[in-house]
Length: 514
Image 1 (cartoon, rainbow, N blue to C red):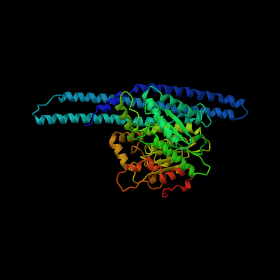
Image 2: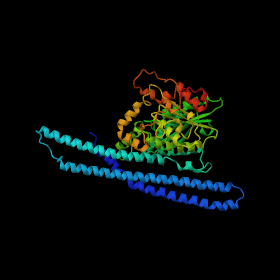
Image 3: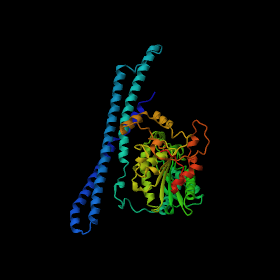
Image 4: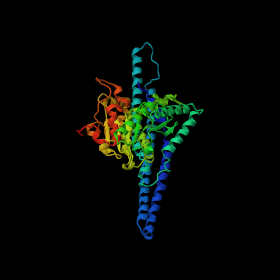
């Protein structure tokens, strides 16, 4: 029988006061940015009278409009967080009401009494009454949880907008980019410090990433450590390793892994990145150079299963549970998409303006890529996305035409017939694990959306479905080997993905009936 105390305690621990404190900061941003926009507008008249050419007044007018957009964004964020705080406070009240009603029922029905051991009928009656009470409590608490989750999901989408994307082209959003070589040197210095650290988890993380760097270097190409952080993502850490010099590459691919991967075990990913970079170079012109990045920069569901370090923190069991439940829907892909967007923006500034960029996601990583392509602007500099063995496109993506970063004909998918993950069975398992999520998604999005969103390989999605055979024979039934990243980045599938990254679209074998 489900224990209502577990979700109830989770709701009780959530801090509405902290959310309301964050609202104050958003409101301050709204106020000060709005005032800046007003000052820019007040200066317009004087500029127009005293400046003979229109460029200055046009620039100030653009600044005023940008201030309005940023203020609107901050106001929307504040309102979303206020709604979330209110919903959380309502959930707290619901839990207290459920407990009070249960206490009253226990007293009224004398459910604390112990029946006479020989009275079978009385034992059965009291047991049934207790079960009914606990089941009712659990249903009430899960209902409160579903209502809160719906508001939280909506809030997540609002906060996923990066205010820097609202700035007009040419406006600096951060200090000058250090360049790939300087960034690599800085990250390697941090890694070296961690290797000799007295903190055992830092030392283990550094040694694991160093192994991946050494294995990548064995392929004979330039290797760059573009991300290194042993503490981020609740202690799971983050890392990104490029095989090939991104500063001089004609094509750059970013490979995003799925569930069960950890930055402490990047060996397969860097090996496949090296294979991808080599295949892309072969697919392009004779003098073409390519780089591929293994990006482990988001909170990967079930990453603890591959972590080479002991689970840290004060409550390892709670950390394992928290990391595991990320796998039951696309919520973690939304936050992962924001991180991928930030990484891509920084990486884009390190590479040649003429270089092409392809985002490639496998399994849950494909959902992250899809959500990033939904939120990144057209000027983000993404040329193509490739979704491998995808469980779904995530939230608010019904077709390939819903992406803002790439046009529909630059959205590619690969799904082998024997791969169980792109099939409905994945949605079914996730919904059985989280039935409250069905209600939450319906309330938040107004329609019946699966836990991972629309199948991007379906003809109705209108993507470029790559038609290549699996490298593993399949005789029916469930075969998780079909889903392996090795299978998707080898043989004909690797050649097709490399052709996309190289921009040789005419040789990519795609489904014709779209």
